[in-house]
Image (cartoon, each protein chain N blue to C red):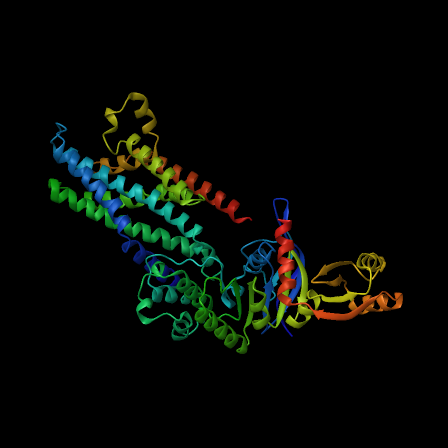
Length: 244
Length: 302
């Protein structure tokens, strides 16, 4: 237990002290939010849209940090030999991994709070206390499949490859999942595909909550399915890599 | 003497290349052992298997009688790897404290700080901002963090300046005096000779020699025999090559040198045959030369 606490604390310190994470996972979504709800006239001035797009940006931010930040950090630590050093210490691999996930989740919590606050300050988005908390929780817990994608990216050999690949995955998921613009305005075929993507189901949970209903069961099940698949895949690859 | 390390018929195959080929040795508690060899001799691979980072293709490795990956082994072992990297965004002091917390009975913090040789101001810097040499010094302190009984160093002094190098070896000697077992790899013969009480000489994945620095020296240093010819040089050289005790001969600065495994036998043969030579000299070869020759052969082989 003491080990877990110490490890979590160290991971948190490292994340908080890195300005790049803060920049990428906060500034971009908040700027987008400002542009698409205030600057560009979408002819859509109702409060529902502002709350909807706030959720889009919050999920967009957390998804990105789960896939890219986690993935690239894992690759960095491995290529620099730090992971190897940890393997020869008595620290169990599981604790190391848990520490990473914890640090990442704290980062997500921080992002969610900042983006929600931005929504309130920029557009006066008003939701009930229950809606704020529930959507926040949904975003934190729903990020699990994306963290699993992050560990997959983290299995790559080079930082350059990892950052390139994760960027593409991230952007593709965001656009096709209706995070940048509502999925309804995409072509019909794209919509069909989009409904099966983890990003759409992730976003939709939060969109439903701010609309006053609850996430669909299908959202939960699809996300769970992706989580299981990505986790198994990640464990399999790791086992293969370690069996040298 | 208790064996801390037991390597039994260990081989490591990469694809179809044998990096380490059927190596066996035991290492006694409290000894300082150097794994010496040119680059690509299999030193780091052997170390990787001792650390449980690599699984041997054949044979067994036991540390404290256990598998290297065992938690007990991890708690009693420390290591400094060739590529020392540090966690970014943590201060030097924080990293040391973090690694210390992994061990049941960590080394005293003050001792570790002294072992890094870093100035107080550097201890509060982010570890990734340290220079290469400073990072290695930090790596050294991290290897000692758990107050280990067995310590591995992979090419520990590469990139260290003379002062750091001296401090490093002084600390290592101090640790050995406390009864800790030390194993390090190096390709500097001098270092192995000065520090170690036993040398394992690796070449092309084989363990080619195992003994004290003096024993190794007499094994790899060949004596050379030289003399001046009386009369016809080429005739003398032809007759020399007919002797079984002599492997070959060459001329250098007017003298004829012969290569042989056994100088006594070669001399006897020369005198019994009555070959026309004078001013016979036997030279003790230099260790560096012999080692260099070994290294050169290695490079040619690659």
